[in-house]
Amino acid sequence: MTLKTLLAASALLTPVLAFPPICPVGPLAPLSCHNTTAIKNTCCTEVQGQVLQVQFWDTDPATGPADHWTIHGLWPDFCDGSYTQYCDESRQYTNISCILEAAGKYDLLAFMREYWKDDGGEDESFWEHEWGKHGTCYSTLNPSCFTDYKPQEEVVDFFEQVVRLFNLLPTYDFLAASNIYPSTTQNYTNAEIMTALHKVRGVNATIECDEGQLYEVEYTFNVKGSVADGLFLPASPVGEGNGCPAEIQYLPKNLSSTPTVVNTETCAASVAG
Image 1 (tube, rainbow, N blue to C red):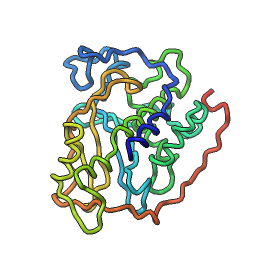
Image 2 (cartoon, rainbow, N blue to C red):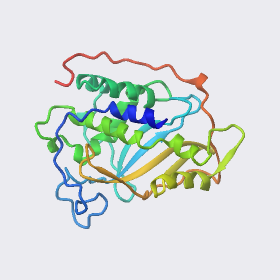
Image 3 (cartoon, rainbow, N blue to C red):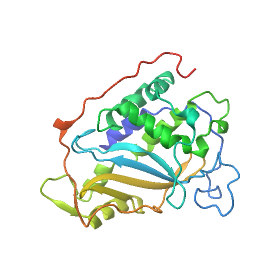
Image 4 (cartoon, rainbow, N blue to C red):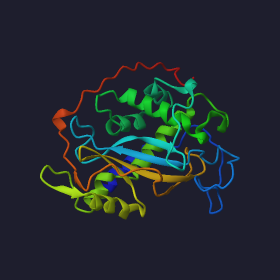
């Protein structure tokens, strides 16, 4: 993605609708995973404070553009790499598109339809899964943290923040800057890929492979303030393994294998009430 495209994509993200708590983000503000006592204000410091921005490289079936990775999600982990999941059964929403449309986030939704893809074409179900499994577990996105809370406003904040971080982490460009391009004839060393990703943030990323083929990258952050609008600081991963061999295939996408998107959502104007 070029800088011009990146800036244009970022401009699509209007300010969040909800009003999360006003949290300090200055030098003395609490940083997740750095507390030595119990967190008193879980609306301003993440309880699961190791936050991972996770991206896919799907090749066959292929998802997204040939020269861009796609979104997997934004995962909260405890500071030792463990995590909880599906934290609120009452907020396991099955209408993410409708929630975003009701909030007027048409440009955000259009961006997700291009860059947040399911390899089986079930994009909507994928978004629902990521929100239900991970989004509901952020302490700073608990409905009780918001002023004048309206149902599902925290969902909008979550998806906006995932896309905002994704736009700051163009993995294809990071690797290309070190002359690492998708190839059917050339392999790359684990060290080459790790060095290329370390170079741009100053900390290690985590890479994952399937049968020696690179398919996922995870970028770790600690957070000051709320996930909705806080300060994300690059951090070294804790408790995450490097699931790749010494020699790695980084294959090009077979765009002829792109799945057909299944769209089952019919939205009513009153979704977000």
